Amino acid sequence: MKQKEKIRWQFAGVLGLALVSGIIAYPKVFSYLPFPNAAGIEQKLKVNLGLDLQGGIHLEYAADTSQVPVGKKTEALQAALSVVERRVNAFGVGESVIQLSKSGSEDRIIVELPGVKDVEEAKKMLKETPFLEFRESNESELAAQIAQANDESKKQAEDVLSRAKSGEDFATLAKTYSQDPGSKDKGGDLDFAKKGMFVPEFDAVIFKDDFRTGTVYPDLVESQYGWHIIKKLDERGEGDAKEVRAAHVLLPKQSIDMVPDSYKYKATGLSGKNLKNASVDYQGQGFGMPQVALQFDAEGAKLFADLTKRSIGKPIAIFLDGEVVSAPTVQSEIPDGRAVITGNFTLEEVKNLVKRLNEGALPVPITLVGQQSIDASLGEGALRQSIFAGLIGLLAVSVFMVLYYRFLGLGAVFALLIYSAMLLAIFRLSGYTPFPITLTLSGIAGFILSIGIAVDANVLIFERTREELSYGKTVAKSLEEGFHRAWPSIRDGHVSTLITTVVLMILGTGFVKGFAVILALGVLLSLFTAVVLVHTWLRFVVGNWAEGHKAILVAPKAPPEDGEAGEKHVESVIKKEIKNTESAIKNEGKVKTVKKKKSKHRKR
Image 1 (cartoon, one colour):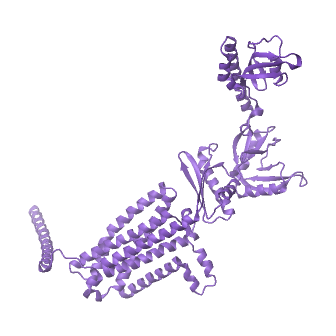
Image 2 (cartoon, one colour):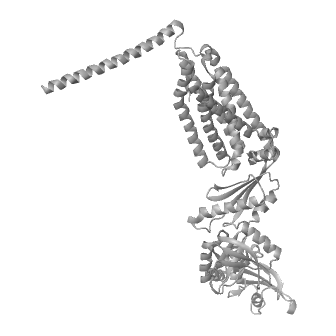
């Protein structure tokens, strides 16, 4: 294939690329073409706008991974992220952003819902994602802890009683040690009371005939609330009308009934992440109350078998969103990985619960710690201003390139327009890939910055071309030398920028990462447009006509010296180079001659 024909085909490829990029970048063109579903095509090719451009809801959740083994923490967080994403998708929220983040040592899940206006509806949508967990009885360990705590409380009560009997101020002791909030601040004073107003053990002591006013009862009085140190302050009336005024110091006693359900059971590692399927079932072979049937995955089945094996005769509590919904007693080991959730459920409640569990049960609990609502009108204003700023920047750069670099600058503007169309086309087509691009304000900033980077490469090329023209070379030779000599600088500049963007992608979050992604795309595209598109365009357009119109092609650059002196300078440089080359050749010949003489001398 001849060189000229090859250049024509390359230029045709550039025009085709420009045409396709332009149509995708501006899909309204389809409405003017004979396509049956032009409106649908335009809708599918829309750019995904971020929360800051189209408004919406930003929610931030803290993920509690305290009960997750260290080695499985990342896996649990990824599973929670997938569950939240499925929940959001089930409600039809498009272009949502769901990602993991860090706040100090705390793990966060960031949820951005563009176009959603009702914050409460958004929170409800995610809150309805249930956290399912199976726990085993912790009563034996809990009982030991309670017994130890009660022993310590009783010892403290005995010590306070001893101090009260020795004459220490009773009111001061009550304010310091009593755990009765109703009387503590009053020095333990309970005011006058008739018989029957206190617990029987307390009543029996304060109404004793031998318990004298102004004395402290010599023994601890134990009731269901704890240990009482009692002092009789006064009495009045007789018979059934008798009233006694007493003060007390209460040191509490704990019992297992006082402990919340969440403390009566301990984590087993079996949770919603191990759930394979949930379905509606009925007790009593289909004639009883509705219940939820659960089927675990392989890991969950093994955990459940081990759990039931060691819990025979003990209860296993099924927690849903932190509340016990069922705590059946295990009769035997269950090796097949099946379980049921029973309770006073209606059929509708069971169906909803099954739906929510199948959509995804959270492997770790999440708590809302931050929310933000962004008005759509603010996003529209920011988008208009950003587009206006981008157009002004593009126009300013184009005017500068044409005024300063003339015809070459016009080629750069042509490539810049193709570059902008290609980048916008990538934004639109990214929705069909596993990595959709969401355009934010920071992304637009990266796009505008990349325009300057794209022009920077052309400036290097054109300056080198002007320099070659100043030495009297032909236009074609100067253009080739300009591209060839400018390439190392262009390459190094673009690579250093790409390294920076990669660091920002790895270490940055949110808007910073979006800025880095768009800038990286812009840098790669600008490299292609400057080195390939501009080069192809100029090789096709610039021909023999340019030899006589160099001033139209590009603003001439003055040679090292003007006029005849300049020509003499160029001539002297060329002569000097020739002389140096000839000298080097002669020296090389002399060296070879000396070596030959030495070699002959050795032979003799």
